[in-house]
Length: 349
Ligand code: 1CP
Image (cartoon, rainbow, N blue to C red; front, side):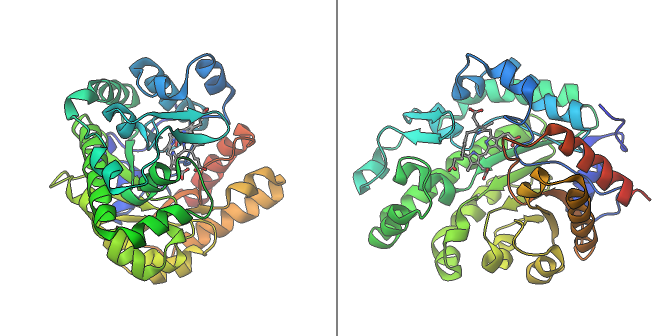
């Protein structure tokens, strides 16, 4: 691992940028930095189902550390999945290779909502063990804990798996407003428990993934979704860790995404960061926003786009360099190492 610039994760460039404090250089990490772009991940995962790997502290620790060692990124992201709290609570979910989470009995009625099992924090011993172990291994490099936001989790539960339009989800939201609100409330409690456990075991920052919130209008988001995402952050109480809030296609929602309780707003590649900074306002930092597809292009294009993102990121209170969404599986991991080094070089004082 490259020598970290700070002596403790609480004083790391990631945490400082998230709070809008001066940094030694712009911190870099990549959504989905652990996983299929790494041959060492594919080797380690061979023969183990995704959701079994997510409950094995040895595998979690090793997979989480792999990209930190290889790329010298400024943060680790805990290896897990947004559906894990539901799986632990007893919902029948499988993560199918090449597809994603598939739900055996989708939530389609009021009775289905009421029948969803609650997460018992006592079931999260493996999570605590893995986080503690990781924090010990990582030293001054911060660990980002994460959870899925209630809306994005609801899309999987209602659709039964990945979908593009999320039409059933929206239809349920309009047709059954009370059950919708109860569903999102239940999901906010389980995501909050999942985050709290990670922070109490030593995670230095958290990210709430509302990946699919961008399919909503601002009014629907504000009235039917935002209060539940805010409840996830509120569930952290006074825990003093920066909060990152991310979604895809959220250009029109950016001020609201910040209002839900974020220190850092994650931005996808659709909007330049200077414009995003204007929309989010002065009190929050930004994370993003290199298009993950750029990493499949030639080196000259990669370098040009990295420089552009770094330049436009200067308009924000603080900037955490990342992609606009997760690393694509075909990405050459060498390019991720190169991008990390380039951002560090461009921004070192
Ligand atoms: O077979 C495999 O290797 C499984 C692929 C995989 C991996 C490595 C999935 C299935 N999830 C993960 C890990 C994961 N998921 C992480 C930790 C690793 C890291 O970031 O480095 C995280 C943070 C997630 C979060 C996650 N899961 C999100 C939010 C982030 C995002 O990409 O928007 C979402 C939407 C999921 C659902 C999910 N899980 C897996 C897939 C392929 C999907 C997306 C399916 C879809 O398109 O709806």
